[in-house]
Amino acid sequence: MFVDSTKKKIVSLASINSHDQIVISGDKSAVCEASFNCKKLGAKYILNINSNIPAHSVILKPISKKLKKKLKNITINSPIIPVINNVDVKSEKTSKNIKDALIRQIYSTVRWQEIIELIKSKKYFTMLEIGPNNILTNLNKKHKNIIPFSTNNLKNFLIAFQKINKEKNEF
Picture 1: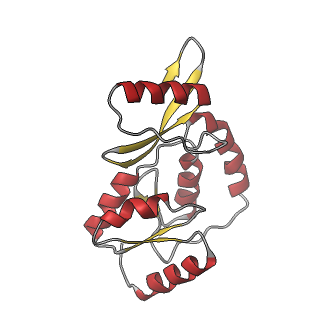
Picture 2 (picture 1 turned 90 degrees about the vertical axis):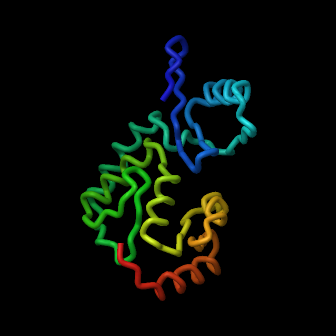
């Protein structure tokens, strides 16, 4: 995290997607300045992700407190299929630990590169990206032993869950 003490603007390391792709998040003007400085220091590409929120930034830490209150009234069962959280790079089994990871993921760095290394070490083959985009699915197409599925529409969602239900991996 970088804090500009003169302006109180924050830039956080939002995601480590691969050895050559990182995402920063925070105050828009501070992210623009940091991006410009990265380009000056040799970054090949700077892409602006069109987002209205500073996802995975410490700016959202106050929001996580609201989520914590909401999660108190929600029952989360132990997952049948392992779900690796992006904060600790491990699969949680208890409701308490799952909720804790969900709360922290709002303002913490996504450790995607480590998640992929864990998946590869466990010899898992199917990866689901649940969300509106397919950014992580595209990142993982280069890994030969990982079959990535984006579940951004109903057809992909059904294909992915049929595939994963056929596999009997133990984590």
